[in-house]
Image 1 (cartoon, rainbow, N blue to C red):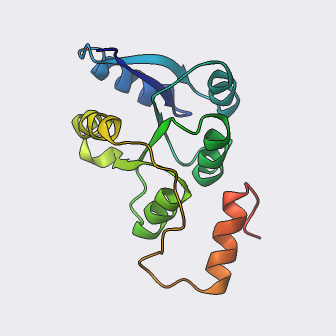
Image 2 (cartoon, rainbow, N blue to C red):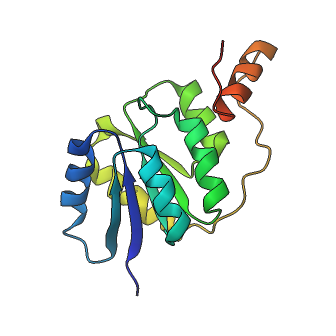
Length: 155
């Protein structure tokens, strides 16, 4: 069995280093690349096959919703795990609707991230289609989400 090819992205190297160190004990996962900038991540995805991308959501470079869209354009089959301290259920739902395959809170511990990697890897990749939100959104909120998905400001 080939190891799961992972790419880690977070603008804070301490996060990606900790994840890589933890995952190094497992033979069935291989950290293919650590990226600390969106540009580095996207350039890597242009030239390499990746199974799973573990990404932070908020950075000085990018808002996660827009980043997920960019990743999907470059590699439709890669699975995305959002790894963040965000706790807003609305934001998490929006990230999932944008195309992330899973969300793991940084507050729950890195062991949960490994378990989610295994779970997501076993799932068949199904293209994201219109998922009805479980909360009612106003037209203004819907417009803001669409702007964020396009990488634009909500102003």
